[in-house]
Image (cartoon, rainbow, N blue to C red; front, side):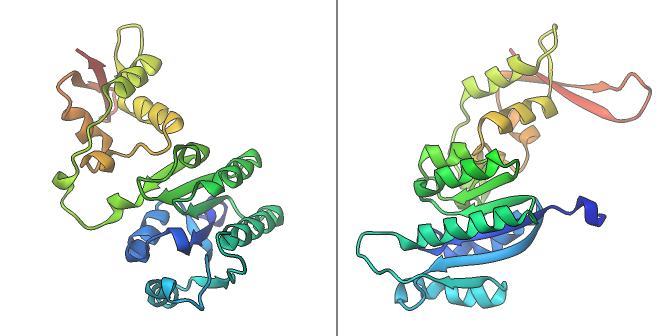
Length: 233
């Protein structure tokens, strides 16, 4: 990968609303999207509430940003993170942001960053409010980052979601490329991830659906590459 192809990201962690136990898996997931050029975690590090984070800060070279809680009931951590995010945005040295929190207070921040043309990846628990999830280009639920048997995940994919995606990108004969379906879903549903349903890839998820038919089609240019099409039965 050349320097021009490197995607530089700022990883900003709301330590008050993020789990330290998945820190390693979180950074590994972020590495799929780009290089974590900035890694900061925000919170009141003088309290015992964030002690579980401290070993991870050292191990992963995450800069702790101290923010004292001067007023009860007010989240000063949010303000500090948002101010830093805007400073980084205006510096113009980044391609995107990774906002790690389950707090809806960062909804407007995510929207503002995207308005500036940068990509926003969100990471939080499944309890994360919908507006924050929708404000991100991609949102990953941290539950799927835990080391567990995928079969333990019992979520069921919404049939209407799949059917709408197929209809949106299908050809006249009703067939749609799997890549096109996946792209459409990701653009319209930031939190969609096959791992939410116990599958490592979209193709495996699609094959598990009894209302979907799949076929392999050879490219007309004679190449040996294949393309996957699906349609509802």
